[in-house]
Amino acid sequence: MSQTAGSGTGYEPDAEAVAKGTAIYTPRTLRLYDFVVHGLSNRFAWGCPTNALIGQYRDHISDNHLEAGVGTGFFLDRLGERSFRRLTLLDINPSCLALSAERLRRYSPELVEASLFAPLPSDTPYDSIGLTYVLHCLPGAMPEKLQVIDNLRPVMHAGTVLFGATILGSGIAPNPAAKALMGAYNRRGVFDNLQDDMAALAEGLRARFGQVSVSRRGCVALFQASGPVSPDAA
Image 1 (cartoon, rainbow, N blue to C red):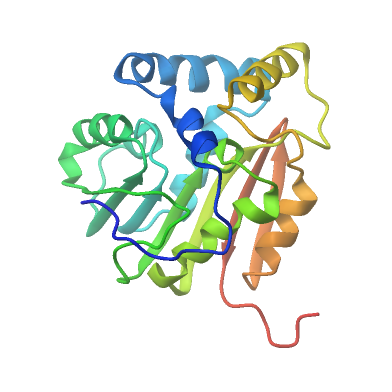
Image 2 (tube, rainbow, N blue to C red):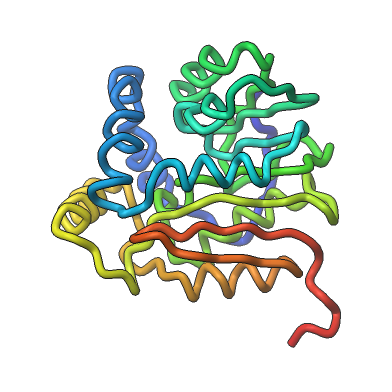
């Protein structure tokens, strides 16, 4: 299913930057993605064990789940045998959707080919939304990137849990491998995260949710957010 047209948030990312960030994910490169990212980079560069990311899913996923930016479907596949009342996979890249759909076919997922910077074609709410390893790939500063959450609002209710992780480019102490990868990915337009820090992430989430948790493992910020902002919040 393709996304319907809409106005979306006020931020309009550069179309060339968006295309550059997604072009690397081809059927050929996606076959290597899990080994390179989850097998090597998480451990040796980003300093965040892949099991910590899988743990986020085990702790927060529901049987009515939206995966926003599906990648290869790795995290959902690693949950073992479970049931979903409703599982939706959303990605702007058709290659990511095709691979993930095949990998997760036992769950009969709904597929949505759409940009997070535009309104979703549905307003039926989910109980959980995964946003893992997406934000560091989006063009713009952190306040602009977090506007994608505003486009997810129509499919969230008061109890929906949004969770995920993003690789930070500022306020961290990267090792040589992380520095090399970060520099290369940003030069190629795969990442746009050199100014992304945990404070801006936490501030943006707290402006949108009442309950927010943000922690860091190496270069990676892990977050969970839910509930409305209190009217008494400053």
